[in-house]
Image (cartoon, rainbow, N blue to C red; front, side):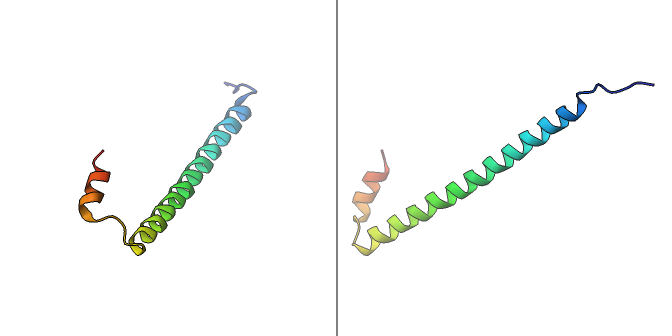
Length: 64
């Protein structure tokens, strides 16, 4: 009969920690992306409410 090494529980613990860190990072990046998108929408609505640049000027600014 083959007996598994004594460090197998540590391997599973490390595996679980790595996956937990990955999911926390993915959730943080999702939250951060939503925050940046919200800020961009606010900037866009502010620019539009102030009259913003005309279409030609906006095209020139976008084509860097």
